[in-house]
Image (tube, rainbow, N blue to C red; front, side):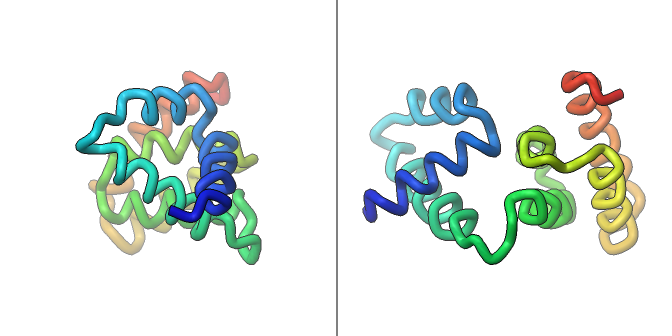
Length: 126
């Protein structure tokens, strides 16, 4: 493991998803899942999110579109919260969901709206 990239990833992961969320995920990792948590933190967050060519706000919008397209709603909910942390507005979240609807279908957009409503209500945005 590249310790510097891991630390960079850990910092970015906490900034986006929240320190409590990340700390809890790492704390419950065991011998079976810890290698994945470490590599994901280093690779996804240190390498992918650590590339400064794309700002965190834009990257969050990209994630909402891609994860929404995949229909991975648990992860979409997590990244919707992260998008708010990265300065994405509810109007921008709505626009990302429109893209999901156009390219992936209305049922998937409806799922994204359902989850976004929950996240936005919890955040006091609705």
